[in-house]
Image (tube, rainbow, N blue to C red):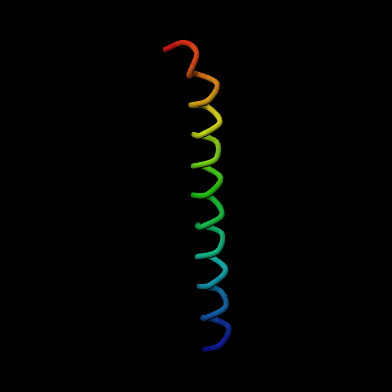
Length: 37
């Protein structure tokens, strides 16, 4: 049971990291595109 909980937590942490990376990438992209608007 403990193994299952730690696995779920790892997946959740990875997902959080992924979404944070996506947001950061989008922010950088928006900054780069800003002058063209």
